[in-house]
Amino acid sequence: MTLILTEGFETYNVDADVTLGTGKKWTSGTAELRTTSGPKTGARYARSLGLVKTVAGADEHATFIAGAAYRAGYNVSTELIGFYADGNTTQHVNLIRNVGGTLSLRVGTTVVATSAGVLIDSNWHYYELVATLSDTVGTIDLYIDSSGTPALTFSGDTKNGGTDTVFDTFRISGGSFQETDDIYLLTGGGSAPLNARIGEIRCYPLLPNGNGTTNQGLGSDGNSTDNYLLVDEPAKDLDVGDYVGITTDGQKDLYNFPSLTPTTGTILNVEVGGYVKKSDSGAKSIRYRVRTGGSEFTGADAALASAVFAPHHEQFFVNPNTGIPWTISEVNAMEAGFEARP
Image 1 (spheres, rainbow, N blue to C red):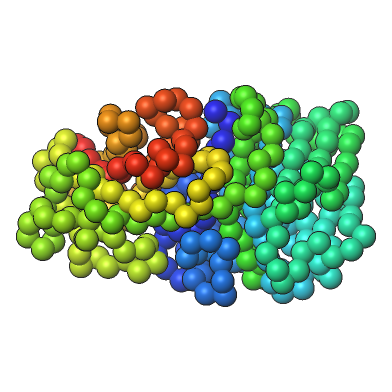
Image 2 (image 1 turned 45 degrees about the vertical axis):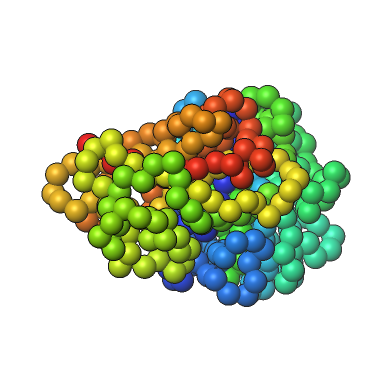
């Protein structure tokens, strides 16, 4: 599997500068999360962000492919997408927004291609950067709005010093109120279709709308009836006064969800998430579950750090029941929820 992450900023609950580091998909960084001005899909987008994702060793690769929706903010020069190596210490390939709205490709600090016209403006556009690291036969291509023809391209030396011959870090940036949404990152490894650019993606948030097969949690209303009503608000409207609690390890709650709005397309990722805390001083974990095809599957245990509600998530890039990408009908029939763990 080569898909590393998708991000639509739907699982965070503040309209402010927020750290999106460990436990929130990213290695480090901050973003200003917003709910106004018409995000592309869902309810959230980010602006003025600077996020870093350093991948696991098994995911380091000479080719990185990233996509993101951007809309221009202040008329400044700023990095938008960057691929780095040597543990995020060597800057190799960057997509740069210039004053006036043109875009440039850069290797290290050297500009290797610049657009003749404005390519970022007050409308949402989708930008995909595809780069291969090499000091002889490297390539960089920028695609816009799923066009089959690169808007900018470069071939030659894409390696700006350093020792590694593979990318290990992805940066997604946008200073001075550049707005961003619907991000993906994948490598050039694996098999089709996830070893090449995939075109514009959209992240659709789904909220519980019914009880699933199992409801063992005790709601804040003092019973286990219709627990989904206590966890059905969007993250941006998080209400910590209603919740579902589980005190016995191994017990779980599952919920139904509405069908996706799109009726055609490819599912890249199903992410299950929520705001979770522990209620005592002992060690406690959570793991998310999905029920599909009549069987249940779990994500990894995630330790709860404190008695403060914090976001946790699990990504299911393929349907664990089939081992291949989800179909829309499978997502529409899926149940998802959580389980208490020691």
